[in-house]
Length: 315
Length: 164
Image 1: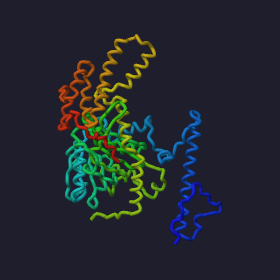
Image 2: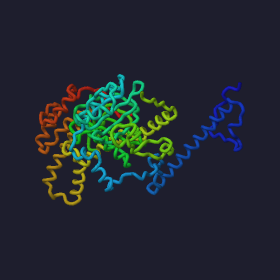
Image 3: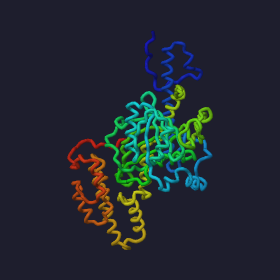
Image 4: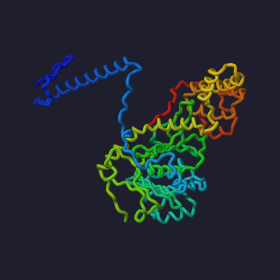
């Protein structure tokens, strides 16, 4: 065969009617394509340099850099986006199911349980979650129906119920139900990392009440979900503990992280990841407590309608 | 029994990919740090952390612009307080990169540090962890009981883990 041809000269000029794809020989075609690619890259680099020189030459008068388009920039504006000054929303929030929590009338008490027969990973995840959320208890139900557990929970003053659903030995779903008769949110859980799998050198979370950060919950739906999460934690964080639990919403995925922070100076803070981490995606939000058949759904993720646009998000 | 819903491969793959991209777009560490700094600025932590650098710098500049002799005495006091605090902070920040949280322990006690004597004491005593000042320190210290604060080790500082 031909063997590799000698390396290309500095400036390869391809005749204008030349197309790499017309060469029948695969090896030669491949080689010519590589040369063409190199050529393109060189041109692109030269163009960039030229532009940068022009920019510097202009100095202050240079036009501002164009902002790249991101999905967040291009997001379809959602009508239900909450305006901070919206009175109707404020009124709703003062009278919804979380009002007792936000008025400090109730103290959160959480019950964490799993689906039937949890396996090791789920069990450990539940334990770690219980250390992260203050005033929470893990309880294994053996086949008891949720509907029967709920009255008992209410009787014992629990405010929230978390059910971790498991599939093939890994947790993959989360049902969060606010108890007196509050909304129930059903999430799909993914990327669960237990504490030992996280690369860090911190110690375990202490018993201090952590702070809560809720990021990016903009729409009405996002607001209610955010409040659900906030209602899990006691109202007054203990700043001594320097722990913070973060629920960050990005493109409808809610990332949960648990960190310990330290302020090194006024403008610099360091964080160290402690607790478990997981990602949630909202599947449905129900008005009453857990009831899959007769419940009144406030929101369901309908794939055919909602997943069509890549720039539209609901939380 | 319960109804089994099968996984849909295409959807699973799509959602996983989207989740990865959302994670990258989220830049969680930066977001959390920004939020914490915001909260610090907005004074939600009250007096626990004593970094009024920003405010004092601004105040200083203002006062420089206005007049230098005006309220000089006051300014000096405040400046001294602040300088001591700053100095103390910077010294410790450089030294104590080994153990991140010792800073915190020292800084936590700053709620009563308006008096300079205490600060001087602290500077001297900064190498011994037993401040014994505020009960606040108790649980904080108990969290890390075994870390030595004699800065002898030349080991690489355990830099903050920016995970993910």
